[in-house]
Length: 200
Ligand code: AMP
Image 1 (cartoon, rainbow, N blue to C red):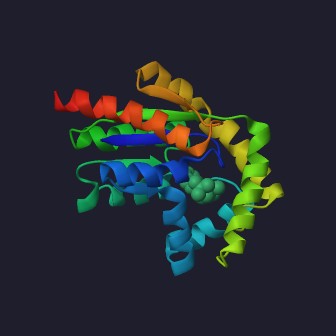
Image 2 (cartoon, helix red, strand yellow):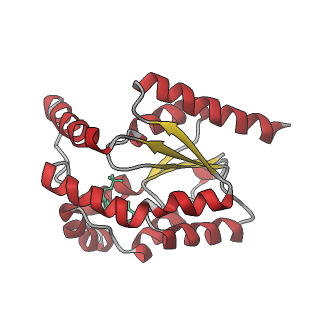
Image 3 (cartoon, protein in one colour):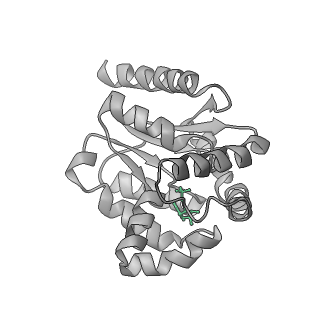
């Protein structure tokens, strides 16, 4: 099963991905996590990405497409994956389509989290607070100022993806404002229907 979770920062994609991983045993491939690891390791990709990420902008398509292309070659991604935070632009989506079709693969579904934008700032503040309370480092881009830039980047560059996937007939939606467990239930319902179709 090859799944894309689409939605603005703070919509709950990371939390829900972890639950899908548990249910279907496929890896969550988060470009944000991969880039943060590259920054922490000081790799050339990390050096290029660091300041862009700290300011809330988007890392160049070529860098991100490269890391995803390498990652989906790994053995654990052979039977499927959840992409979280990728694609973020229509160009990335086109690159992904090409990458998959070269391997004779296609996407199973794209699920968009529909959320009320005004609630997102509060959610991000809560995420930062909870992370700090656990004694873990808080993401530098989880401040209200940088969050606004990330939200603007989403609206300008990523929101058009819902029309893109809508036109391909691969888009489904969940109400991301429901309680976390309810969102999980809605997501699993969609994914289980796909799993059944694939098995029949
Ligand atoms: P995230 O953890 O998905 O919120 O991503 C954190 C940051 O990493 C974003 O604000 C971007 O700077 C960068 N990033 C993550 N995924 C992508 C992507 N697909 N394209 C460009 N930049 C990305």
